[in-house]
Length: 251
Image 1 (cartoon, rainbow, N blue to C red):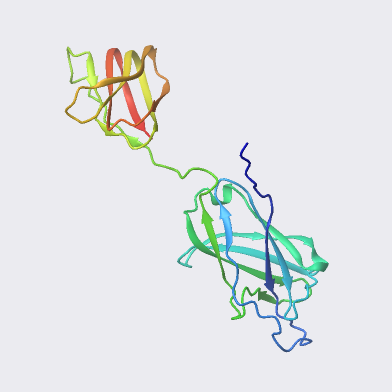
Image 2 (cartoon, rainbow, N blue to C red):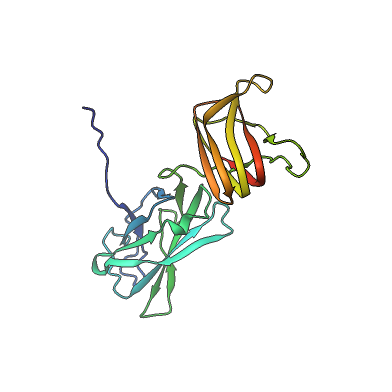
């Protein structure tokens, strides 16, 4: 039996809060670079941060509120801003959850993040640094690795039933097969008749039936046909008694 080891863990990152009391005057702790964050579309992402000072000691954040911001790749658009949740304020740990819904409309990209601290004991709002260059902005990779990448549906041309008087058999426009599995969606308008997917090895070869014929009676529903295997050319044969097919899409 073949086994694969997988991991369940939260992303943990250490960031620097400069001491503002003048107790520490030198930058003893110099993180050379900031590790990239990773956010996965299609799932919730929990990020855990530990806030340390220049001496690499945890900062007591009992009087602090932190705001996590996600900024687009170009740096000219704020994707989201969320208040972080304290895990153990005395030990300088806090988290933020970027939900599946937060990333639904966000493109895959190398974006940026920043964290700002607000103190309840003063009017001070200061930046959290991610590297030894006093960088207030880190890199976050937004990935589509959990769920399949969304593919836009292709519209298939429908024959004009009204202009085909006397003809009961019609054919949709052809489309090229690109995957081992495709789904055809059809919408009907009081349709009575038969629908059959056909395939061919070239656009001038003999067409062959794929799967079973779908028979319908006075249907105004939306239906789906799964097409298995690779077929270079595809089309839909429509044998209509009455009504029409109002829309065809394939993906």
